[in-house]
Length: 456
Image 1: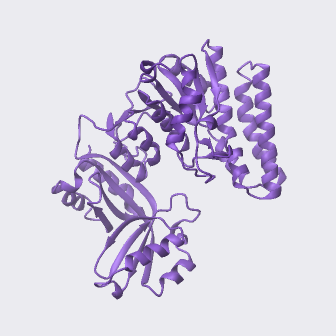
Image 2: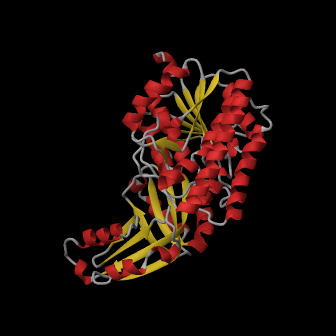
Image 3: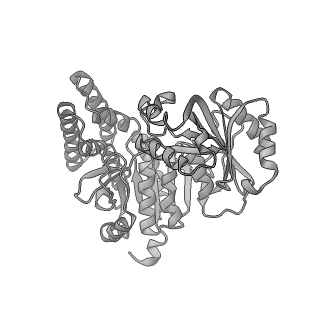
């Protein structure tokens, strides 16, 4: 690809609700057709498909239940294909995909969970979406083609949450993908890649956005567009704060903080490749593409003290107390080593002379609340310290700029939520956030009060 073409390429990613059915796919095609700079399109599985494939990947032994799940997946795909007037080649490809899905789901039910087969099964949702969208574009007269993401997205072999290999990805993108972009609008799959042995892997939560960002990084794209069912990032979740409003622009640092502390529109890892390559990210609504949306950039013209609020519920507070902490060395190292052995992810931490309080991150855990803290963990901690475990808590983050250097921020936060109890406050580790841990039952009221004071 010529250098000037490469620097003008836009990578557009469409999420599950944006490719949910034939009408949704037509809206995606409208957006692509209205912007010739969109040369690479990354798609998720149609809404509802991945959840069903995840259920099948766990090995559904009940044949009736397994066939029902397969039938639901097939129905979603057939409802799209029947509107396409599909070619014999597309029909054959769809049939091959569905047959392989059924075979893998049967093998996982009969032989038990096998990570490599699970990831191969999960990949078919995205494969169907890219096949359909490429065909719709061709029927509209575009020179479009479906591209196998596994040819470029290389990962390790950690199935289910594979780690990308950006240097290898850049090399493979230049080899396999870049030559196509001058002549084709290329449609490919998010969420999936391949390891060194060419086995299909998946990138875990937020994987499709991450795939798009990795492609954008490798191409040094002009822009990464993420099309979803909301018109950008809001100052807070509108379902909890009715006065929340869209944010025109936000920094990568702020957006990462929002994602880390509960905002669902982006996953924190998604932003890293785009940030590394200084590729601006636009977030827009597929149903209302004319709306302004949100731009995520390294720097923004306006840098308000408070940009947004975010909340993460279902938090667990673990307080470890021991007189052995007093003027002692190695206590925290031993405590964290024990938590690591039990695969417990620590989020926030505060300490005093003889105690340490930790919030535990339950993201991706099969356990919720106090169940996250196992009896085996408590038994191993018992000789080291006394432990108290609390759940039913929520972490609220105030996100903005120079929060740790602005004298009045903490005072205003305490004043606003004075009627409620604060279990923990964390400030200073990041200039972009101030966090308070409160009772989950108080979270909505506190969010509304803080939004009214800082953002309305």
